[in-house]
Length: 327
Image 1 (cartoon, rainbow, N blue to C red):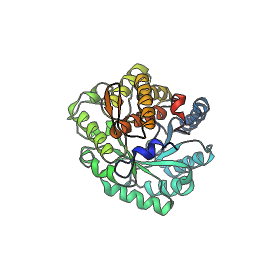
Image 2: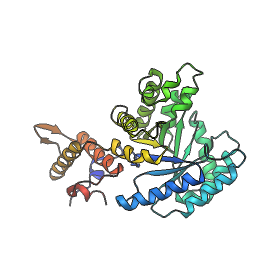
Image 3: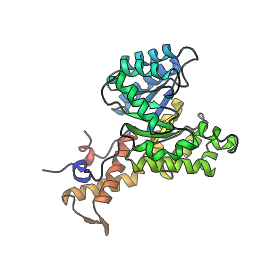
Image 4: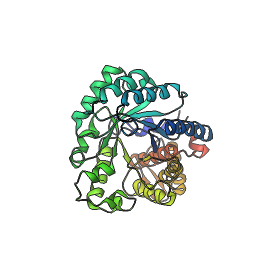
């Protein structure tokens, strides 16, 4: 009987990172949240599966003084969504007065319907500890936490944050990171070009990506604010995926979702090659093989397997010969 690649290639010494959709779409007003959930449902029917997450935003979405009502609305929307929906929520930061209420309402009422909770402005693993304690008080099961790193000090602690067992993904908060430097980084570094060229921003991005991969977690790239310029967004997404090691990216406008899916998908030629290598490896019982006069072994097989998983996470269907591995 054939051994599934996940069983053959990934043991305790080489665990698989989580497989998450490559796009995480953020929305915060009642109208944009409803529209985003409808778009997710429409694209789920189109693709045959849910291809992006919708994160309902309390931090930037809740009007000042109406945080409790906004949290209740987020919980209501999550509970009303269809079972196949992938819905998350961004809470207020751990130190914010609304954080406890957010957690009690959203996790307490709708925790079973959520994929994860995003915790913004995480400065250290202690913030994740505090969020986890609040989560366990509100909702017993193990809902993952995602951490948003937004300051120079937090970048220094990215490895300890990523290593926390409750953390599934870490994201880079570009705009707050630039602002935290008190004018030492120009505002151009918040743009689609500057964020890939300013040395301090580049260093932070690489540190976060490296920390995530070291801990077997998912690195999520920051927003591109020029949301109506599809070409700019596509270029930035490709750089994030192919030069900076990110496997997920934030969207802040519906027009950004499809370009992110396409940009994070591997090249079609590489997908075909990965299929051929893995099928040959399966026939060899996952022993080393020569393919195209090149040696391939388990390290190579893991690389090509993860490439197929990235193709699926980007919403693309795989060739029929390997589709049986992805029920």
